[in-house]
Image 1: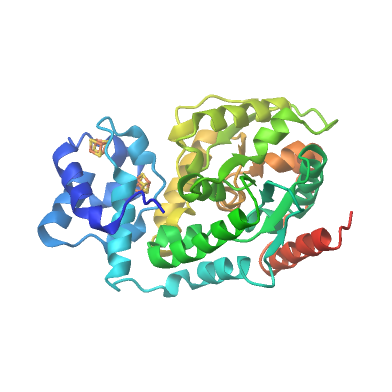
Image 2 (image 1 turned 90 degrees about the horizontal axis):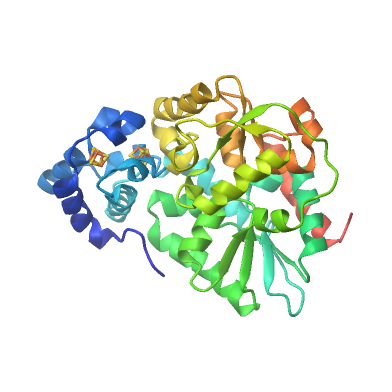
Length: 366
Ligand code: SF4
Ligand code: SF4
């Protein structure tokens, strides 16, 4: 398995940032975390001289915006992830604030929730992830039906990609659990994973080791669903962090928003420069004011427009600040999505809907 920032590389990453950062403040200007703690050079120097700063990396959302704007091309996200891993390896991190998210992750890969429904000879599976089927149940069902119509012998896999543990720096746990999932998929003949969640896409793209990953938007672009209501109005497109480095996916999504009839508005924070929604890396559990500041940036740039995104987590977080809808809801239920009448379960109801989604697939219910 490859790593984007092995703990043993932390010294080297810190040295590169210490030597390369010109303290131009381009990244600080966009980030509440860096605004409080100083330019990356200051953080790297502090780590190199005193070894401290590892725990503070848990207040960074690992959104990657700093790396996207850095004129020196510095590996900033990798540095903060390596600091998290080092702190976790040293036993300096309490998992108590993260328990609800880790329990959510564990449930997603539990016997109750997991499903490997792969027809003989199938080499492509739909991997809807944890949040999307629970928060967007009607759309998840419509999407599965549509994919089955257009992808021959499509399999369905319900499990978790373990992104929460990955981002918390729980490297050994992530490698063991995601490694087991990956090995099982390969043993069952899977070659391509279709994801609805940008976080799952990011994990499979980085750690899939031979498993190809595509977004469901690839299939939808080739086989658009028929006959939704053509919408009118303008919208802002929010890029989820895992798509920040995928310009082609950003463009595809922008075109699909336009296909609904909504007119995407250009802003100075489009595409790779979208701020974090506030959920990333569990940073908001320690510093809710940072998460709020990031979410408010999107609300400000929306300037009264609806925000469209392709991540269920982003919908949940940004909705605290600005009207936000999921692109898949817009594609499959345009009028009800814009009218706000599509059910959006919350809390325990999301677990029930995930189970219903599984049972419907197991018993082949329509
Ligand atoms: S929160 Fe995002 S922009 Fe700020 S330091 Fe972390 S990765 Fe960079
Ligand atoms: S954008 Fe790059 S060079 Fe400028 S302060 Fe941030 S890390 Fe340093």
